[in-house]
Image (cartoon, rainbow, N blue to C red; front, side, top):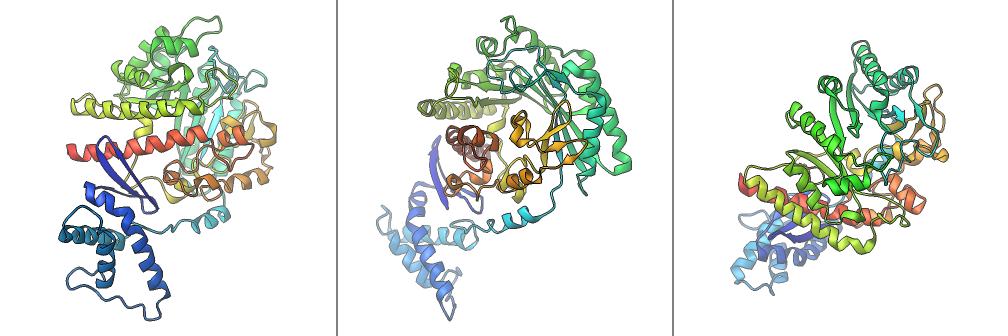
Length: 480
């Protein structure tokens, strides 16, 4: 599968199955779709040939017959014959190397993934089902998750960490995110659970990586010092410009929270030497020009930024709509170009959705099945119930068990094992499938009642982000 596009003046060819990215000149770019059927026909011919002998050209290893067919396919390119032949030769070399027109070799892997023993590697601890803000788009219903307000006890948290260790198999590195609501409302338990986790590391040969997601209202020097010592990452919630942030993230009395949290976040970012944190925002229909919010955060001095699209019912006035997609795609282009400009000036920053690894990247299992919700990653409520992830909490049909009983609904786990790019019809011909891994199961369920469908608006934005991320890599290569 090939995906071609031009972004910011770069003609880019992505070979989806191999992950190879090629920045080409105009003629080679035009030649790729002309050569694809020639290569596929040749491959089919070789598979069906009883002799299966490939005569090589004198000095290039490409069968002369194939080279002639390829050169003929490019006859309408506006270039001299020798140049067309050279282009054909170069592209065929890439094809022979498995970097162009590559076949999908991953589908059979998913069978092994579904059959292998499940190990849990990460927990999202809902340390507080309560919050001191009243964010308008909160999927957790002001921290209650449409249930009752509650704080996780130390005893429940201990059982959760014990469950993680017991169900992690031979995996050494484990992850625990303190989440809410607002986890700082239960700060003493957070500290006590970190200490307990550390006490498990040596006897069980494990290593915990703790993270914290906070709205910043209660953040202070003592908390920050502890986080800098114990938390591998902290996520600081802020939506961008003051007017946007205060509109969507007010206190329950309606007052804005921007002026309170920004100084704290600046101090946190600097104290962590501008690494191992994110300022994380959400854009809605109230700020379709969200690139301005990203750049506002960059202007405040933040180097690690994530601003993501809201996911909300269509009935909500702030929800994104399909007619908003063209504007949002243009915003990503604007942001990508500005990010590059600032980097050239020595004022660069990282935007989470433009970060992509073209050399290594995640393992095959993650590329095919995503975050591992319901299998490798689970959420734990304040009373110890286990759900596939934080966005399923409170939906009783997805209650998998409890920290006392372990997972009793193995059928739910098995359903999530089926959640991969090959189980989703919409992913079949999508060039971004190995980057988004099929998208979010919760969003799929919320919009279609199935974890193996897709959220169409999210898909459109994801494809654009992948295109921009690859273009940025191409531009950065020129800067080196």
